[in-house]
Image (cartoon, rainbow, N blue to C red; front, side):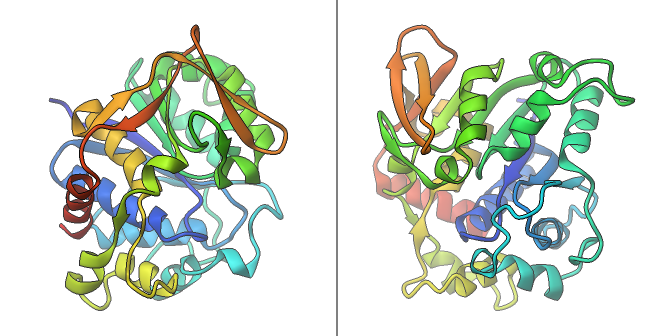
Length: 298
């Protein structure tokens, strides 16, 4: 099996499970199951890109391209910087807040333009701001294609941690409902959603706090998040695992259909025609927790 080419899009900072997802992705890359093409940060925090770059550097991949949202005022309050500022300032990286990362939309277009057709899996574990911007982007010096055509040509499918299934409300959609609506209605490739109800059943992080070295940056992320028992639901970890290993890692797909996102970020599900599926766990929570813990720590 060839490694899966992954672009990770994350809001790393408000919740430590984004850091856990990055750890899982690097573990899968070390197993030659994934090739990390790029990482994108999807909020306005000036520490997100540096945090991602610090993690990539720690895992021995300092050259991974990192992009950042070019929008001010989106989820950049101190309350959303539980650990990303610390990692950006305390660990080696190319971006320390005063050094801006490349524009995520431009970097997306470059990465997609250079990729073979149908070769990229995008996994989004935060609000869908960057993806909405790419989808709306116009031809430029990178490519004569629109963003939608680039996505159609280059992306195999999209994996989204977002929504609650078959219906409900979840934070990533609630923070940027217009972006979630745009992706649900206009994204041209299949989308696989892993919902709030999946990750909330899977508690991970205990082994990380017990076994990782004191200066391990992902351990620091979980510690700074303030967890009393060291464990957190595994929302974002499930998205990365599925993006790389697919259904054989422990999932059943829902019937085909289409997600419908309301103006307040709540969502419903319409079975039938559509390019969407949501994930249903088909192995015991304890088995999945053990798998994710092993990937986080190795």
